[in-house]
Image (cartoon, rainbow, N blue to C red; front, side):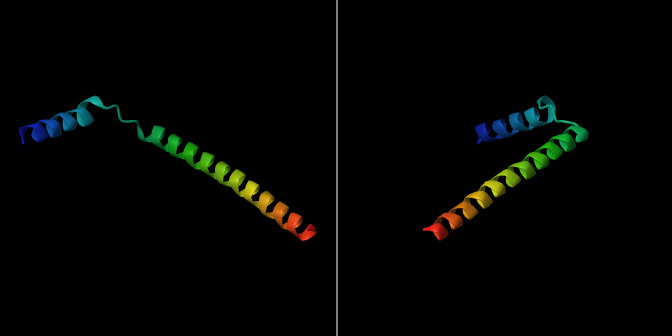
Length: 63
C-alpha cells in the first residue's frame, strides 16, 4: 500500500510542479492547426474515394 501512496504523491508532484503546461493561446493555435489539417485530410480522402468510385462505375459500365 505504501508503494501506491508514494506513486500517487510523486505523480501529483510531477504533474503540478514539473510539467510545463502550455498557455491558452498556444492551445488554441494547436487546436486550429489540427482542425485545418483534419479538414484537408478529409477532403483529400473524400476526393480519392469519389474518383475511385466513379472510375470503377465507368469501368464496369464499359464491360
